[in-house]
Image (tube, rainbow, N blue to C red; front, top):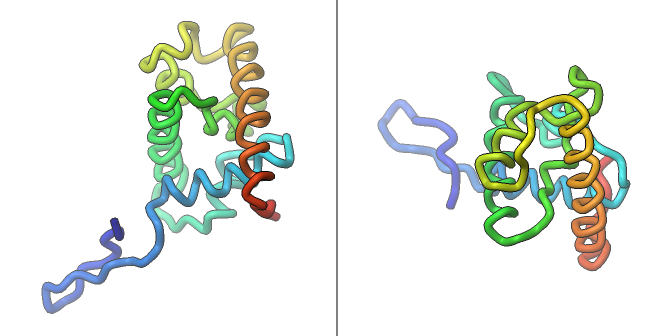
Length: 142
């Protein structure tokens, strides 16, 4: 479904042909999985060419949607590939909150439990999504 991009002065609506953000995020992260190295929220927002305002918020909303989608399908959480520079390599607290809400995690947003959960989720995501990207011939983002 196209996203509404702008309301025009004559009360018509211009529709963007760009895929929904969550679709673009997943496609980018499938390519990132092949590198086996996490990407920061900022790097991903830049790679997706997100426009202000609230670029990181736009991204986290899309990532939470992907967590829900992956959990419902029984897949590894592709959002585990995205980390916060400010948190020293852990995802933002919202990642853990979402995983907790979906019964994928029962700990806190920081500390040894969070690091262990993230390491496990990251490795599972790299294995699953990296193989998927290789099978489809996805190209890495710069």
